[in-house]
Length: 329
Image (cartoon, rainbow, N blue to C red; front, side, top):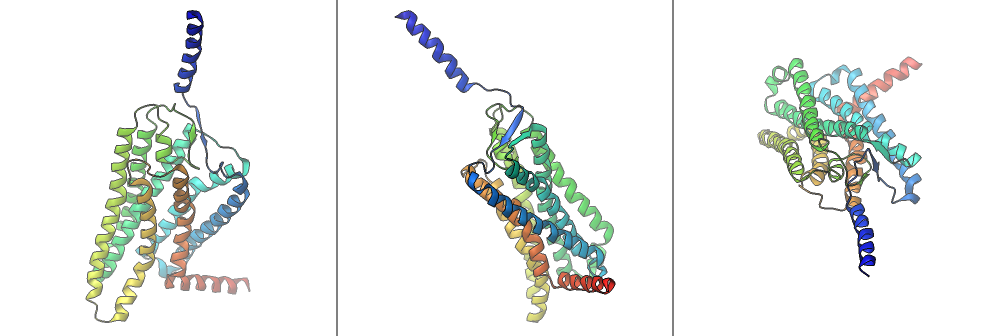
């Protein structure tokens, strides 16, 4: 009897140890939309079409601003940088997602995951800083119109643009270093369609609470401070607009800010939902849904808003199309 109990105990203990074992992970499996096998083709078609529209829209904006001399101003230079940033931002995640939907291959190496996260975070942070810079540009244009050409001269704009991207990728470097500083051994299943912070951090062998807290405070610095600076710029802008006597003058001045405000609200709204919380409050499915919005839908918003709502871009586009038509004739 004792021998039998000992035998049962020795067989049960290894099973329990196997359940709790932590094996070093050499590659990740991106779960993505594997729980929706019947919608795979539909999702591929939908995301692919959205990506093509986003890509063509952003390329159109960059081309129009480069080709039309009337748009060679700081405001439109920053818009071209924003469109370029959006194009690179979508290149980091969407082609990968489409390939996995098409081939049903979920594997990604740890180095590939780290690279994807670095560029995704770097471009996302740069986007926040660039929107802040665009808000400052509008503040100078409306509140200090006579000094605008001096304050926002080309060398200053170039320096500010370089600072934006250097700062964004510096933050991304710190965050990815924190996340990938220890091995992964809890599982190799990333509950997402790309390598984002929270789902990858959950797989770390080391205690991740301190890392999550450090990343949370970095996110607050990037998202909240950027947003507050934009609000401060618009507070001064509103104060200046109220001093303009004519309603037409106020409307014309504010029309240059409407597109920027729309993009700011959507971008910072999504960033706050995902990153301004110490721990994921929603299910992986809900997080993926929000992620689809800010990686697929939001980048589409930039070209749509800036071409449909911006009269100068529309006029410049018509001029370029008219010149092209004359040349073809």
